Amino acid sequence: MGQFPSLADIGAEFSLINWIQQRSQHTRIDSILEIGIGDDTAILKPQNREMLVTKDVLTEGVHFRLSDATLGQIGRKALAVNLSDIAAMAGEPTVAFIGIVIPRDFKRVMIVELFEGLISLAEDCDVKVAGGDTNVWDGPLVISVTLLGLAHVNGSVLRSGAKPGDQIFVTGALGGSLPSGRHLSFEPRVQQAQQLRDHFDLHALLDVSDGIASDLRHILQASNVGAVLNAEQIPIHHDVDAALSQETRLQHALCDGEDFELLFTISADDAEKLVDQNPLSIPVTRIGEIRKESGLFLRLGTQESRLEQTGWVHQ
Ligand code: ADP
Ligand code: MG
Image 1 (cartoon, protein in one colour):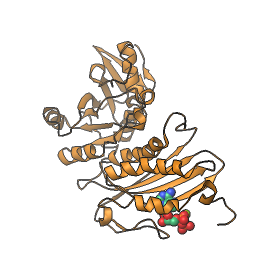
Image 2 (tube, protein in one colour; image 1 turned 90 degrees about the vertical axis):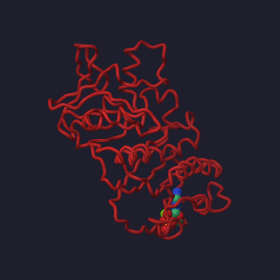
Image 3 (tube, helix red, strand yellow; image 1 turned 180 degrees about the vertical axis):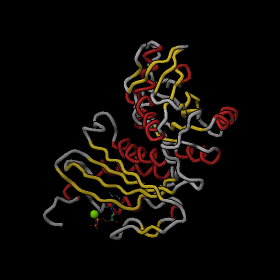
Image 4 (tube, helix red, strand yellow; image 1 turned 30 degrees about the vertical axis):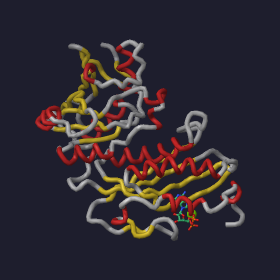
């Protein structure tokens, strides 16, 4: 539309959208996607499975700074956080829609770099970019991804299914993600969540974005239960400075956030099986137990302390 700034204003030599379309010609998503980029809407073929839909918006100056991350990393993360949400339901990601608002002084090569980061990860995860919208303005970079997924054939895993006696597990290790830059390169646990769902009756599941001291509360509230975590069992990531005291390192593991690991609960019987034979190629650690009484506690030796979002309160 004539009166609005267009992509031509930022020196698009040939259509950026044509390039995105070409670059997205991959994957085996054809079973779900009838028409992707190029018409007025995408067309999806109905599947005999529930569909999952998630969306995250990343804004320059709020979620990232251009001085701290490459454009490829920003594009990658914009998709990765959505993949992590589909993983948190144990679903299978399928197609993505990309809304982007580009600062006017951006060069075409910069937008291509951003999309390269995003589409490379999409390829790795069998996700196809099936549409979007592109604007140019005088403000900061904004990128919004809508990701669709298919529910696991055994059913999605909600936050509300944790039961007293369940054992609490986490994949990988926690803490130090922001200062190390891991938050830009993390591997969304998409396959791992599906494998866990293949093998176990997962009662509750989410992805850790704000730190388990915060995120475990979502499961507790939704399931109307409480929990105790064992301090010695929390897997602390090697990105957390080894020179810090053990107490401070634990604090980072519990509260830092941006880990994008899976936090889940399973029955005590299933827990024994998982500890005995982990089907994943990454570690899973039993870190605590769900109980009937409300509240989140941290067991340090023989002492139990109340665990707040910012850490624990010494008794
Ligand atoms: P319309 O005016 O009908 O919205 P557009 O020119 O915005 O048409 O889009 C043309 C096609 O390109 C559509 O299929 C749309 O989904 C796709 N598209 C536009 N921007 C993007 C983007 N940033 N990423 C992926 N697809 C896009
Ligand atoms: Mg449009």
